[in-house]
Length: 360
Ligand code: 13P
Ligand code: SF4
Image 1 (cartoon, helix red, strand yellow):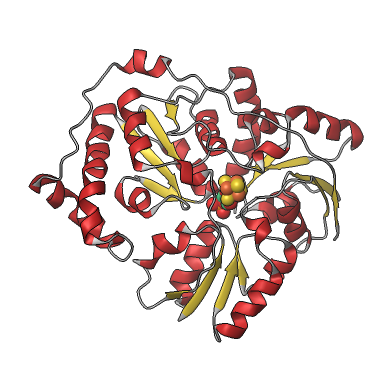
Image 2 (tube, rainbow, N blue to C red):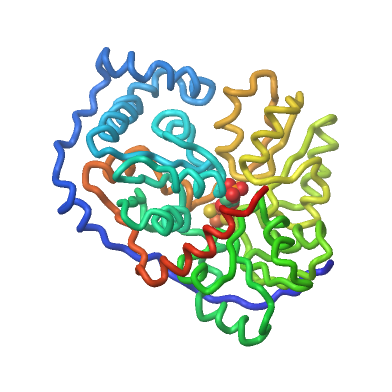
C-alpha cells in the first residue's frame, strides 16, 4: 500500500535540573586517577573495547568508568543505554543495553531509585512515563531527535480532526505530549504488528515517513503518515549501497527501517538496532555493512569475531552528546532530571503500555 505524507511542527524537551540533588543529597566528586585498583576493575571492560581504544588512551577513560560504576551503587542507580552509545558507555557502564523497545520494557522492570538514560530525550521520557515515582536523569538535556522534533501535540489534534475515526500510531521517537494524543505507540521492531493489531483499514503512523513507507510495503492496511525523518538514516541512498556491493563483493547489507524504502529494498535484511545485532550474531557473515549509526558496528565487533564490518555509517549528533564525563556529572549532581506533567504522563502511558502488552 502507498503512504500519504502530511506536514510538520515542533516540540521542545523540558528541564528541571535542581530538585533531584536536593532530594538525594550531595556526594564527594570522585578522584579520577588510574590506580592499580582501577586498572584491575576495568580490565574486563578494556578487553571488549581494545579493538577501538589504544592502550595508551585507556588510563584517561578507565577512572571515569570505574567512578561511575561505584557511584551507581551509592545512588542506587541503573544505567539504560541505547545501542548507539559509544563503546566505553555500552561496554563499560551500562546495566542494560538495547533498542527502544527493549529499553522501554526494561524500564518497567528497573529495580533502582534512579534511572540514568544513556540515549536521547524521548527515551528518558519513556522511562519516566513508565516509572512516574522514580528519578530519571539524562546526562544531556539537549540530546534530541529530528523525528521527535518534527511533530507537536497540536499537530496530532489536527490530524484527529482531519481524519476522524482513523487510529493514530506514534513511533516511540516522539515527545510525551505527542504520545498522550495517540492511541498506541510502536518501535521499529513491532511497527507492522502494531498497525495490524488495530483491525482498521486505514491507520496514521507518525511521524516517520520512511518507517511508515517501509511498514506499508508489508501490510494491506493503508498507512497515512507525517513528513518527519531521521536525519541520520535519511542520508543513505540506494545508489551508495549498490556501489558498496560492487567494491565489496559478497558483502551483506542490513539496514534500519528509518532509511528510505529504496535503501531498505536494496538491503539483505532490515530491522531495529537489536534486530540488526541479532541478525549479525546468528548469520555471522564474512563481511557486513550496517546501514545505521556508527557505534553499532563498534559495539558488536568484539562479540562477533571473524565478521568484517564495512563502513560507511552516519553519526547521530544527539546520541553523541552523551559522554562518560556527562554521565559522571549526572550521578554526582543528580542532573538533568526528566519531568513529565502527570496528566500528560498518564495519557502517554496508555499508548506505551498498550504496545508493551501486545502479545508477540
Ligand atoms: P531502535 O528502536 O531500532 O533502537 O531505533 C531507535 C533509533 O532512534 C534509531 O535511530
Ligand atoms: Fe533520532 Fe535518528 Fe538520532 Fe535515532 S538516529 S535518535 S531517530 S535522529
